Every structure is written in C-alpha cells, then in structure tokens.
Image 1 (tube, rainbow, N blue to C red):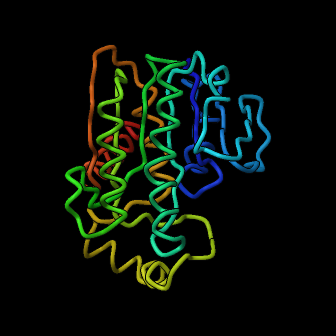
Image 2 (cartoon, rainbow, N blue to C red; image 1 turned 90 degrees about the vertical axis):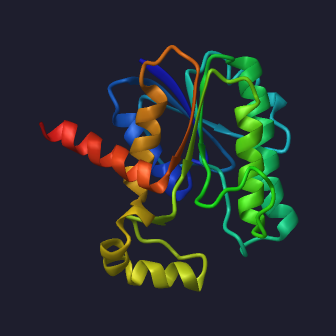
Length: 229
C-alpha cells in the first residue's frame, strides 16, 4: 500500500492520474498538492494548497513518509512569457524535488516531461530546453528511482477549452492522426494510469527510465492485455 503525491492534479494528466490512484488498490493515500482545489471528495484524498512552488520548504513535513510523487505541473508554450515558462517548467520542478528528496529520500519521482525534451540544452525550442534541464536535474538529485514520461500529443478525454489553435486542430482530426501515427498520440487517462502504475510497482533496486511516446503506448497496451487475460 503506497502513499502517493500528485502535483498538478487539477490539470489534464494530473487529474486522470489522481482519479486512477484513488481507485487503485495498491494505493493507501493520495495527496494532491496544488494551487487550487481539485473538486473531488474521497476517503483516500488529502488536499494541500500551496500557492508558490518557487519555494517549497513549507512542504517539508507534509512530504515526509511518501512513497512516490507524480509531478504533472506545467503550462503550454505561448500561454505564458518565456521567463514564466522557464520558472514553471524548470524551477518549480527542481525546488519541489529538493524538498521531497530531503523529506522522503526513498520516494519514486515520476515526471511528466514532453516529446523532444533535450537535456543537452541545444534545442532551439525553449520548452524542449527547459524540460530537458529539469530531466537532467532530477536524474542527478539522488532519488532511488526516477521515471520520465515524454508523451507527444496527449488527447484530452474530457472536453476542455483548447489552449491554442494547433491543439483545437489536433483534437478535431484526432481519429485520423491516431490511425496514421499511433506512436505519436496517447490518451490522457491512459497516460495518467501508466504514470501511477510505474510509480507504485515494487522494485527495490535503483532505476532511472525515460519513456518516449512509443514506449508509453507499448506499456499501456501490455497493461490492457494483462487485464483482459
């Protein structure tokens, strides 16, 4: 029975991960840490409101005794300034990881990154550089296990206001896009489940893995096959 923390549970993927974790028999307790309420009531759920992830020291006691953390906090390129994008994507991740590792050094850290993330810092895309820098910092932070998910297009299973025209277009043509490029898409609920499952499985050894979209899809398909047999 695991104790799981989800950061960004009010977002698309974090919300799916939260709902799945609450129903998962391997999860004893789910703690949602975010800037607003998730609007869910459940016996397993503890909500902690934290207004500013630039400073997470106040969460030290709260994060003690946790088994896994899913960090799904993020924003979209073009939705905020470059400085804000860097702060949310990189600085918030590093700060939260610092406090988590000090409070729960054996916890698993599972990070929602993105397709094209570049740990070398050479990418021309700011999003790729900042996600890559966050990945690099997490892998060097001393966690026993780090799992990095790099999805490509995430299909939102619940209706929402799309952040850009490109996302509105992809949602409209999703059935065709998925048929043509099955390894470049993943459903938000499937992604949330995969992140929870890999975080709570029992593996004692040190392990760091980066899952590209193709590997995420294979993981999901394997889990669905196992469930149906």
